[in-house]
Image (cartoon, rainbow, N blue to C red; front, side):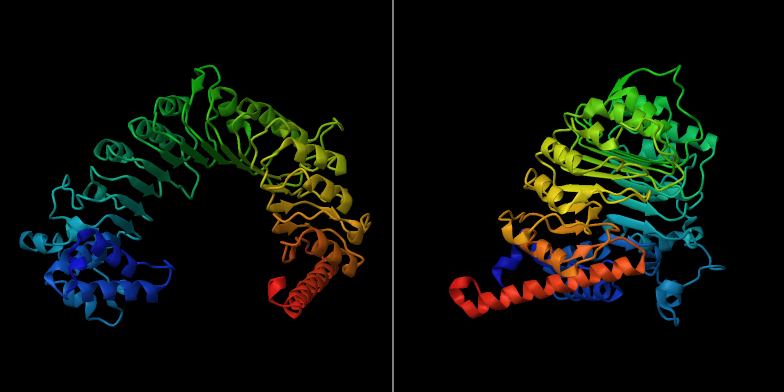
Length: 497
């Protein structure tokens, strides 16, 4: 054996490469990696420990550990379906002398996923305060194993995914004092008493870095403002109890850089933003089921306190029943002109593109020198008001832009690509939404000449004639690019072929 293989760092790198799985959903890849590790473990004593550590590091359920129990092994692996369809109903729990067999490799488990709770009755022999997985870092549960959660906890736990709010959330917070990432993704509507349990549990977490959970009350928000480690908060779900505006204290979140909300209306979000300060906030996202213009305007004003730091803004809502704003001079885009650090802006809600024209697009691009991705997607149908001339004039102000989604007037062509020397080489993704096209050749020629990095145009219309038109544009664009490549090849190596 080569002496380099005796160096633990080198050996671990090699084994990690063997264990690389490009597609986590590929059973074939996972099976091959595990078989390779088993082979390495049985090759020599030096390889055994690191190979076994990797083999058992990521567990999908507890069946593999149950398979180490002599009595259960033939039941699990010798029936037609294998361990993936094994049923443990009617099987006696582990007895005391089988505990050691079950725990043989439990200390190696670093990540555990619990897809179901069918087999936990077999673990009734364990005292309820036993830490079965003493080195566990990540725990993800699709179902809550009632009565057995304490067995899965560990003082080393860093990441935890829960499918619902339970009274034992407090237990997680107190037992797992190193918890950094907590996700509570409830698929059904939470009850008011559950939200109280949530708040109580969150206030026991002292080292959170990221939090994903249903809406919180002011007490929980106040606690989060005292956590110097907290960087990211995502709120997801129905707001059952509006924030009490009579009992709050203005709070400063000194280190939060990312805020996300997925809610029914913007009222909760507006209350949080108005009564809090986020001096380091870089990313803000909100998905609301409905966003009336009055709420949108209040939200924009609340966000203005972060205009010096925000780099990424996403605001989405698809309900088209929202009426147009009564004040015809208002437009959402102008509300963000003061956000000089913007890299990414996505506005996708009714009337977000009202009054958008060449002049406003130029003004916006001139205000955002760092912009890299701009998506303006109004679900409310309206005519295209951005012309090619206006588009390319605005693009001159944004050399770093690589993604653009905007409704373009491709019917009234107001530019001659032969007379235009400007090229925007950074733009790679162009989505023209549901723009109409009349002259396929002319549009393809314009895109080929001025946007050389755009391989094909994306279009979002469900209308058949519009889809067909842009398919023809893309077909012609590919033809122009192929001809250009062929021309360079004919010209010889000096031309870059």
